[in-house]
Length: 478
Image (cartoon, rainbow, N blue to C red; front, side, top):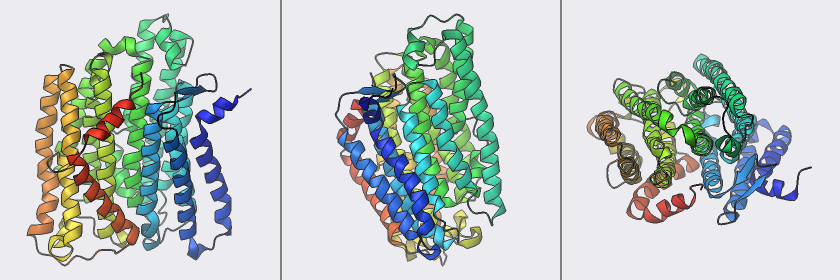
């Protein structure tokens, strides 16, 4: 029988799940021309859940349902980040879905259900729960990617994401089966404590699970879905997907491998090194030739998955791992802030029927809309890792962690690819300030608040990053 402590462990998750189910019913009573009420209620649910999550900060770690889920500093920190991402996702969609004639209440319900899956994945300490969470977060995203049913590209994005997502899930399930066959358990702590009947079987299972997570975080060579899905999906969905799915995927990757597969670090570390390097190089090189801003940002997202993977490479080193994981969590915060700001600017410039998405469409923005251009410049500098932005501090912590782990060449690859990325990021800035044009933007309050606040925080936090890194350090699981 479930105990009261079980429900206390997943209290924020319960609140958001109940709220999403209730919103699904309430939305039926809301007129079609007043779906902003549904958006407001969704934001309220995320806000309430965020309040309960924040109230758990600093509390003692607890486990629930016979150790299948945990509430600790790691899960609380990332749950809060996911809920903030959800609020920003609602802000991106608030005016966009109406402007694109896709305003339907189920958009926000699907968003909430996807976030519940992400939160469950962050808290999972059992491979079966990891699988269930992966499906819960993915299925709503498949639907959201195809949400603009009138556009063939949106339907194509949904189908591609679904087919490749289902394919990658098969790897995860097969990997879990092999791990269970080798250890007779799916509990992360139990896997670590067990004596495997076959180390080869355990290693093969871990490798297959890594493939599944690699798809979710868009690491090369499991990235092939990203450009087409990012380009075809509604832009508000793309912005949320680029942040939320990465947080959940990397959270599961960090917890599963640091907890269950610690004994395989010697074998897996070279693989992670290669994945990180290949992802950084491929993402940045392919982004150079892109003329569509959404495809460029898709390859940028792939490249940043490589940077975050750098933080995980030293996971087998007990001295370097805590600082390295803290650096990865810090960089996730930096990336989320910059990501939502960037996509808010893209949405502000996008027009119906896919117009306004070429990089050349940004010509003249600096003269006509100086505040918007300044914000976009901040985001581009942050993605490169230049001052005065939080992206610079995030990459500094990442490179320091990798160097402390002894992976000098990986750090060099990270620096070189960051220099390469300056070409395509600064091309946007050049278009805004040095090319003539007569652009128009959508003046939406929540959209402007998103890119404005994100730009200010990206700059301000770069001057006082210590407290954020300390907070990230306290979120590292023991």
